[in-house]
Image (tube, rainbow, N blue to C red):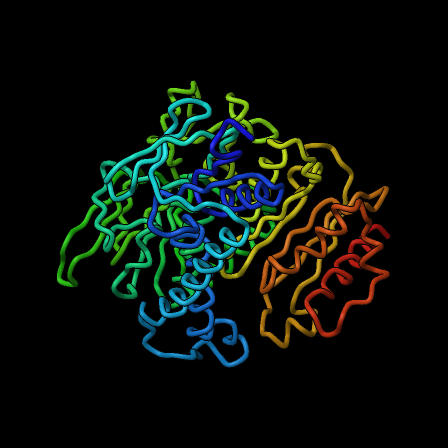
Length: 467
């Protein structure tokens, strides 16, 4: 028998903590998940990934956005769309995901504890009841910190959750605004900006950086920017915000954003999305000698260990890429490493899915990275409008881009913009991970008509470019 109460405790029930706990349980270990909120699932289910992606689907459906290239710009499934129409679908999906997550933990024998956790030492965790009626201490051989992040707030900005709000407040908006300013063009800000633009909201996007999503292929981003401007979005890139303030005029309560350049932006609402801060301040990490880095995040090694070997950190709390998919894999890897099991994912290339409108997904290297590394490469492209399926679904702007080595023809990267991008990317992922060449796409028969045909068209295009 172990001298500890648990073999592993995961702090946080989001994708990273959940996967770490279930992996340990499947190895026959005694496991607990500690969640400081009344519901499981963390930010992913309650305010982040699941709500935003469901909101996106509701917006696409109700606005008729995807059919406008066929039926005209005035087409919509429902006129006078209200926030309640969007949230109806969101609430249903959230409820189902919460039940599924709780059931997965239960059937794997994981103890779910509702408490605020803090470390006494490397093997002892104090659990304080979230009702504030008492506390107790439990011991554990290993701990996985998966507490996630919270929205970063500027102390000089007067947040009220209605006129000036963060992404965590968005599900409580009482009405759909006519105009909105989005401060911060990271993944979260950009996703919400495109969702509201598709709903007909006049959106202004502001960011200090001169280019959107620098880790994504520049040609894909240029195409996205063009499409956003077609949707009447105004972009103020390379601009610093000096003040965000509420004011009242003859149109009612509004928001004024002052830029360092002297410009002023007026809108009904402002979404403040300048990043997220690690939820680490109450964990007592100072007792263990674990220092936080920028934005209260944690530093880990290649196996997700902190400087205290039996304490791991995974998910959003360790920073980029902060995706649910990568967080799950990090949690699984940490548990495997803790108990001496080979995680079997060495060399895995991870895909990124960005649920803007239109959707983006990328994997592998982009042109900028290959150029900097001096790799001789060629490009193959396919446009959705060239593919029968693209015409059928009315997506005339989508594109798929392959990057491959000029000498070996090995696939080096894939970038996709358009409907189904985050699903299509997995075809390229399989070939990339197995070290395949673009000849695979040429010699493979794809169902017709499908968007997957883009792979064959892009491969043939790349071969033709080489003469």
